[in-house]
Image 1: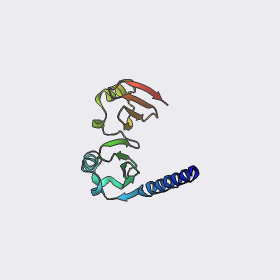
Image 2: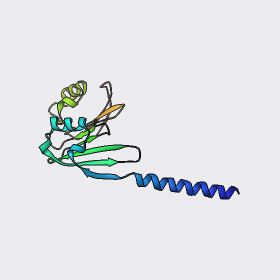
Image 3: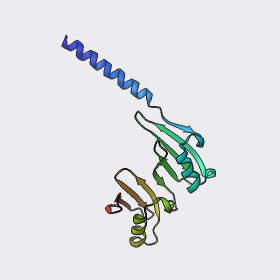
Image 4: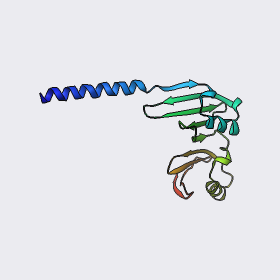
Length: 149
């Protein structure tokens, strides 16, 4: 009897995994209008709507995110609420207004003439990519906690 119960539980777990996997739709191309309003405003303000190449919606099992790729190769990632989580630019600086002032000042004082070409944020820290290929990690208070080359 115990082996039958174990097999039934195993089958039910397999069915559940298959159902959850089927629910995760993955990446799909969407229109700009399908972005959350906050994300639309961010793109229009900092990159211009006319510079958009493609908008992707990534639906995972427990999360949704959006990627907006610009014609020049720049990419902005947004969470399900439309808040940016990552901005990566090619051969130009990310919009200065999205970089916390303390981080911007640190970079200008310690890496004169070097551009911030990428920024990622999460609940605990900011990761900054510089045009000289260095990656700097700061805590939310703006203190440098790691340098990666």
